[in-house]
Length: 367
Figure: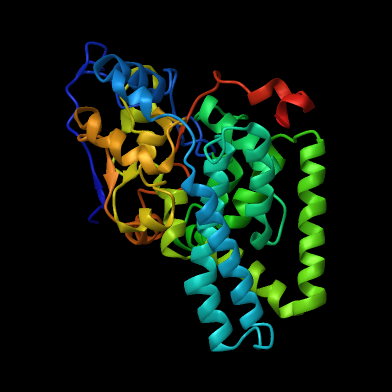
């Protein structure tokens, strides 16, 4: 099957497996992930880029435009909720607006919260925490306070089993290892991303978490009280569709799943066959998603805001030109479902390394 991924040709390293090495077979079908015992690639590449292009460090810092974009999208969603308050939930108008406008807008807010979690909307950490709660309002359910520590741990512990909650569990991969299973995952992936972190490990309740919950419940209650239940249903449906079979939702799968075919020996960590862990996308949907498609760039430099990631890419193009990339998020979803060689097993995992951000002291999680 054709693929949307372009991959660089990698020259064999000195530690490459010998030609007479017997193909490795997994001992059990219950674990078919790509296991690695090497450091994740982003820290090493970041150091190399800074050495070659020290000017990239000047790109770090907050982006003032972010707060205005968030305010505009929050206003858009409230306006649409007002407009649809008398429309039947299963009407063509309600469903079409929820999919075309609502899902796109809430995906945009998901990724605004992603930006804010890196302190990239304001200089003040407290202002970023509070603004994330505001951006959360049209999503309908509170999650911004919990998202930050889980997401920052994803950066600090990329691929580490038991820490990186972006990784599918063995249970998910085993039971959803079919066309129907992968279609189910893509349709309901927002639920997997919402519930999986709590199944892997739980965060302590902090003042910020409590504020997030109280603010969201108060907003939802006021919305239902003055605009009706259908207005609230519009926001919930927008959030569900944003993480379902929607073009922008392709980024969830595109970022870290291994799409290009790997040799069988790649699943044997002792061979040290390099497996790509992060993929970028440089297409037009980045305009709606805070340039999240520039994902290698983002993981290399999490302190550079969305608006300056294209500048980073241009400065360090010699580092990014040959890295694997996708040309279409829509094709990513299609290939993920239909290609038998791509699925939830196609992730790189590590047994150790990384850390839980903040060591889980309440005052650090809220900072």
